[in-house]
Structure formats: structure tokens, C-alpha cells
Length: 205
Image (cartoon, rainbow, N blue to C red):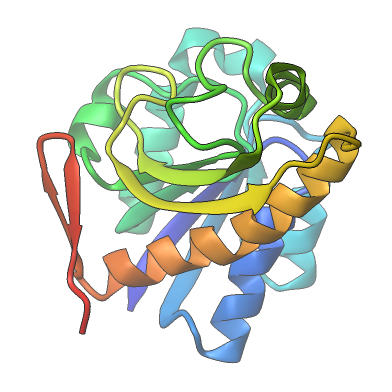
């Protein structure tokens, strides 16, 4: 069974989309563990309600060693893929090396637009609206040493309307996130993804 770890910091709606896809049979994998960098994250409750082991790692306690602790846990659990779903801490060090092309992230814009330092949550959607773009969306990409710079796996688009608020756009993009993230997990679990430098090749059949 393909095992995944899901890393969260907040409400965990993307976690819920993965849970739902596992239950429906769309994803033939097991959520081995949910790791949060906040004890107050509602996503922990989502995990417990679905009998998934969840743990909170305090940023105050672990500081720069947070990535090392995550690595220790996922190796102990025999995890195949790490999914960061609204995880606000920066992963680095040996974790990125040992799980190269085995950590994926979802970002609420069409990378390389509106990404990088400070671009998270509503900030992304405010920036998109302020710029006046006619389309936005979400990106699932592999994690690397940069911020939102890893190879792109999937992008899904939504229209942006002149009367949009950041909250309205966020809601529209989030619906696409809930499609894109499980889709990427399924492709990787079925061994249909190959990475060559910055390009990601996806097997169609």
C-alpha cells in the first residue's frame, strides 16, 4: 500500500479532499500520518475523526530542527510521499535530499505568478486581483530548496472577474485545489510521473 504523510497548519480542507478520495476508492493509498506545526490546527481534528494518526510539532519547541523531526517521523512510518497542504513552515535540509521528488505542495496561483516569499493565503489572491489578471488557479509542484520553485506537476485554472474579492477568488481556487492535489497523488502512486530537470512527464494511459 502506497503510504502518504500530509503536513498541515490550519483547517485542513485539502486534507479532507484526500481523505474523501481515499474513502471513495479514487486513491489507492493510506494516509499514514498527519503532521501539523500548530496544535490548534483544525486539520488535526479531521484526522482523528477519520482514525488517522496525527501529531503536532511545536515550532517553538523544534525551531530550525522541525524538518529533521519530520524526517525522523516519516522514515519511521515508511512513508512513500509527503504532501504539504497549507503547511506554513519551510522544509529544508536532509528531508529535501532524502525525499527528493517525493514531496509535493499545493499553491493557490499559477506559478510562477504570485508565489514566493510572503505569498500565502489571501495574500496570493489579493495580489492577483490587484494586478488585474483574467485567470488564476492552483499549482501542484514538487518541493525543492526554493520557495514555490520546484517542478510543476499539475495546474488548474479559474476565471478572475473584475468584481472579485480575495475571498471569492480564494473559494473558487480552493475548489480546484481539491481536484488537483488528489489527482497528483494518484499519478505519483501509480508511478505515472517522471521528472527530468524542470520538466514533469505524465503517462497518459
